[in-house]
Amino acid sequence: MIDAHIHLDQYTDIDEQINRWQEAGIIGVVAVSTDLRSSCRTLELKQRFPSFVYAAIGFHPEQPLPSEADWNEWTGLVKQERPLLAAIGEVGLPYYSAEACAKLPAYQERLTEIAAIAADASLPLALHAVYD
Image 1 (tube, rainbow, N blue to C red):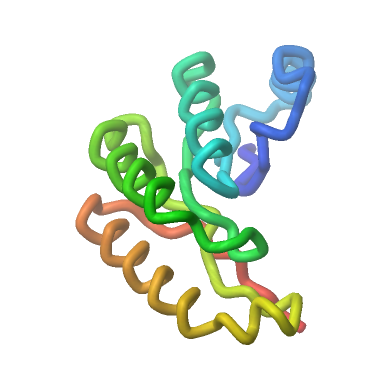
Image 2: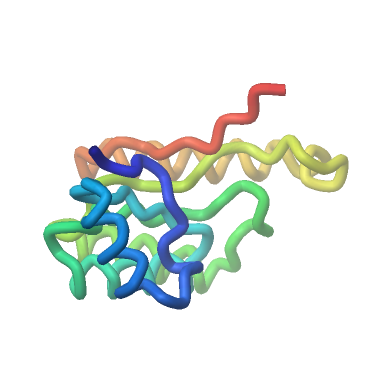
C-alpha cells in the first residue's frame, strides 16, 4: 500500500512517521510539493529515503504564482533532478478565493507551461482538483 498524496515536507518527525507507516504496511509515499522551498525539501527527503519517497515537485495553486527567479530555479531543478522525480505536482488552478480567480488567466498560462515541462520530462502531473 502507498500514500498517493502527502505533503511530507510539512512533517517535523519524519523518521518516526516513516517507521510507523512502514510498520503499518505502507511501502511508499508520493510526496507532493507546494512551492520552490517545498520542492527542494521534497528532493532532500527523496535522497534520504530513496526507496520510500516518490518525489513530485511543483507549485500548489493555493500559493501565489512563483516569482520569475523561483520559476527559473524550479525549471532547472526538474532538468537537473529528473532521475529523482516520480511526478510534477502538486499543480492546478485556484478556485478557493475571489482574488485568485481574478488571476485565473495567469494561473492557466503557468499550468500550461508546467504541463509541457512534465510532458517533455515524461512525468505525470499530480493535480489539485477541486470538486465543489
